[in-house]
Image 1 (cartoon, protein in one colour):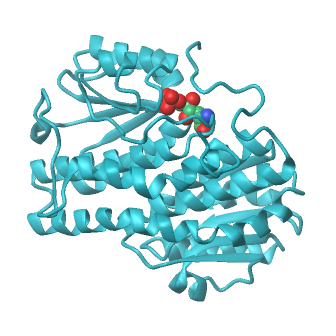
Image 2 (cartoon, rainbow, N blue to C red; image 1 turned 90 degrees about the horizontal axis):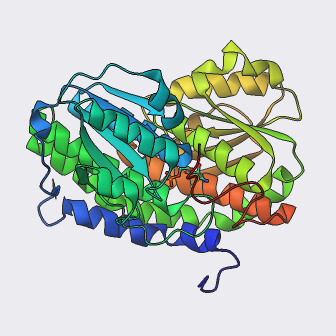
Length: 364
Ligand code: M6R
C-alpha cells in the first residue's frame, strides 16, 4: 500500500524518520544515552580487524560505517564490494569480525563472501532487513534493520536504517575498547537520537528539490562530490540518479576532482556538492571554487555556515540545520534520494521498477 504517495519509493523516503527512529531505539538506551547491543557470540572489546562486504547501496552504507568504526573504535576496517571480496582471497587472521550488510539478505555475492569469511575463521555479523533471509540464517549474529518491507527497487529507508545500526555498532565497539569515554558515548548517542528529527527537516526541502529536478531532468551527465562521510553519499546520490532516472551520474571524492574529473567541467555540467560545515568543509569549498572557476553549475547541499563560507555562486543551495557531524549522512541522504526521485518523476520512468533491475540480485 502506497498510502497517499504516488510511488513506493516516495512512501519509503518519507517513512525514514520513523523507521530510523525505530531502528535506533532498538540499539540505544535512550533514557541513559547509552548504546545497547544484543548479546553477541564474540567479544567486541578484543577485535583487531573488521572486514566488511556488501553490494550497491548497502556497500555505501558500509563505507560510511567504516569511517565511524575507525574514528570511534580505532579498529582498522577493510571494506570491499562483495563481488570482489569473494574472489580476491583476502588473508583473514582468525578471530576477526566480518560484517555483511544487505537489505534482502539474499544477494548472491554478499552471501558467497559471508561463506568465505566463515570458512576462514571470522565471526560473522549480518546487518539485514529481512530476518528470515539466507544471510540472516548463516550469520553467527545479526543486527536487524527495522525498516519494514522495502518495495521500491531503489533502496532508501533500508540504507538509512543500515547507517543507524552501523553507527550504534561503531559506538559500542569504541566503548568496549575504551577508545570512547562514557561522556563521548553520551554525546554520540545524543546526536543519533536527533537524527530522525533532522531527516524530517530534510524532507521539508522537497518542494525546492522538485523545482531543481525539472532542470536536472534535461541533463545528460551529473557529478556528485563529497568528502569524509559525504563521499559515500556522493556515490549513493549518483547511483540513485542512474538507477531510476537513467541519467549518467558519477560520485567522486571531492579531493579526486583534480585527478581527472575536473576535465569534464564546463558551463553545462551540474555538480552536486554534499558539504555540511564539518572538519573537511574548507577543503571541499576549495574544490567547489575550482568547479566555479571553470563555469560549472554548482548545486550545494549544506548548512547555514557552509552556505555563507562556500565562497561561490551556486545554481541552487539547500540549507539544512546545523547538526553534529556524526549524523549528517542521515539527513543529507534524504536530499540525494529526493533529488533522484523527483528527477525520475519528471522523466516519467518507472520509478519503483526501473528497467533491467531486480530488487534482489540472487545470481552473480
Ligand atoms: O539486498 P541488498 O541490500 O543486498 O542489495 C544490494 C544492492 O543490490 C542494492 O542496494 C542495489 O544497489 C539497490 N538497487 C540500490 O538502490
